[in-house]
Length: 295
Image 1: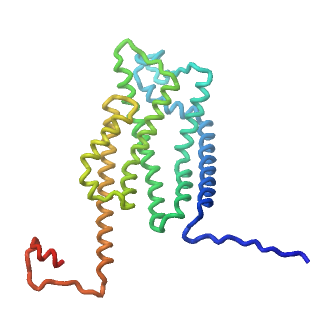
Image 2 (image 1 turned 45 degrees about the vertical axis):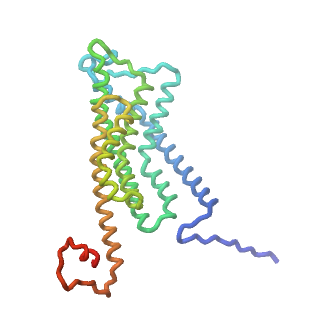
Image 3 (image 1 turned 90 degrees about the horizontal axis):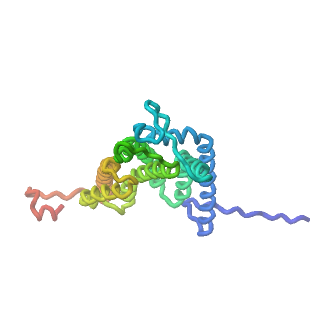
C-alpha cells in the first residue's frame, strides 16, 4: 500500500516576523527584482539614446557659437562633443542608458524596497511609506528639473568666463559626467526635507530642536551647496541652496504641526472621558506658580 506523505506548509506570520535566513532570502529576491527592473529601464534608455543625448547636450548648445569649437552663426544644433578613445563612445552610451533607466524606473524599484521594509512596519507606518515613496520621486524629479534649468545658465557662465577669442572643445566623457553629476546631486539634495520629516515622524528629530537649529541648518545647506556643486560659480550654488532652504523651512513647519497633533493626542489619551477636570474655585492670575502647579 503506498504511503501518503503530507507536506507541511509553513504558516505566514501575520505580524511579518521572519528569521534571519528568511530575511536574507527575501533581500536577495528583492535585489534580483531591482536589478531586472533597472536592466529593463537601461534597455529602454539604450534604444532611445539619441533623443536622450540631444536632451543632455541642449545646455551646451545654448552657449554662444563664438565659444563653441566649430560653431556657426545661427546654427544652434552645431555643438559636437568629441571623444578620444575607441571605447569612449560605447561606455558613454552605456552610462547614459543605465542612469536614464534608473530614473525612469525609480518608482518601481523603490516600491520593491518598500515591500522588503513593509513587514517590519506597523499599519500606520505602511501608509506613510507609500506617501514617502511618492514624495521622494516627486522631489527627485523637481531637483533634476531645476538642475537642467540651471545648467543652461551656469554652463554659459563657466565657458564664457574664459573671454573672447576662446572656444570650448568638450569631450563627451567629461561633459556627460558633469551633466549627470549635476542632475543626480540636485535630485538627491532635494530629498533632504523628506529625510527631516521622516526623522521627525520616527521621533528622532523633534520640532523644538529643528526650530532652534534653523540658522545652523541654513548655513549648512549653503555650505553643502558650495561643496556639492561641480561648478564653482555662485549662481549654481545659490540655485541649489535657496530652494533647499525653502524646502527645509517647509519640513520644519510639517514637523511642528505633527508634534502638536502628537501632543494633543497624548493629552486626550491621558484624560479619561468619565473623569471630571479639576477646577480651582478661586480665580488666580494665569502666570501664578500655584495655578500652574494645580493644573
